[in-house]
Length: 228
Image (cartoon, rainbow, N blue to C red; front, side):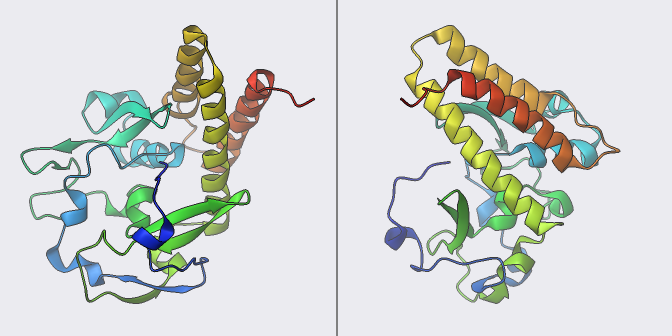
């Protein structure tokens, strides 16, 4: 999700790589779950997030939406899924009665990252620390890759970057398109091809994703304006 703010307003002014130390460790939150409430539609899910939820909960993406776990809405022009919030406190649907995450081992990338963010530049990204988001003031330093706590970090970071820039290309087509049918069909394509169409559980996610991404890029190359 794009944020039209300066880094000086929201961060400590530094950019981090996965091997850097950052003051993000809140020591298991110690019962706090403020970041799991009132998030609205901001916890955007990428295809790997939905794949993990689907595999671990034994539900298809369609069933996850039908159960009220996820919902598809517009985000920066794209139609993308996000985690649902529920109740008077607008708590994450996966927050249990004890105020703990019931899907912590396969939680989405957005949740793994918090209170870090990503600054995309030069075809890749680096991490930054959001200074106003987490209410814990006694955080200690931890290595970025340990904090994110996700398997196969190198391939994961490549996937995150490739997905981000693919969505930017999709947005470029959407913003320039005057044909409402094209806009509708392109959004449906992204939703159906990358989220609703099931991934094989007995195959690694990344090769399957890149098969679909290659197809998506070819499709976009036909729709994007040609230079010269």
